[in-house]
Length: 207
Image (cartoon, rainbow, N blue to C red; front, side):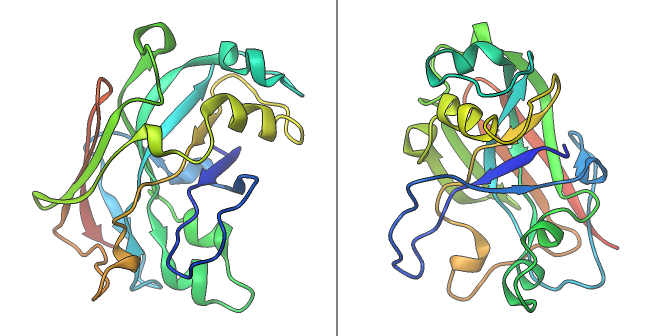
């Protein structure tokens, strides 16, 4: 999990969409599995949710050609990119890495679905529910960058290794963009579902 993660840019400020992926990292201490609790840190009051498709690297490499990059995937998982918006967006200079990598901020699961079982990773329904209410509901065809493009782009800088996880960005509906904003609180239950990959369920507790 120390490898780069991709964030889907948002249109709240009407800025043009980027021509290249925006890349940041999460540390291994952020990684948790299905049913494990997301722990809200005492130093943040604006912890947000993001449903994401996760790419699982099966064969490492550097400078991967776009045409063969997906051959390096072992498979796919459901992911939840938990994000402390007050750290990510409001700290001096903005703290994208620290805001994204608090302990327990990278739930993944419930299983790894091998690449041969997914005909097209860019045609999967994806949604997130918070306490049973649908907050995000989209399809991976809306991703700004395809899986092979992300793998090739990152491998220009980082030698990908077996087991690396790459989060691919989130659809509209995140809490910070709502009016009023919706942030996670102790006692919440978050479920992220991706067609064919299962449902990732995590309770939220106050740290």
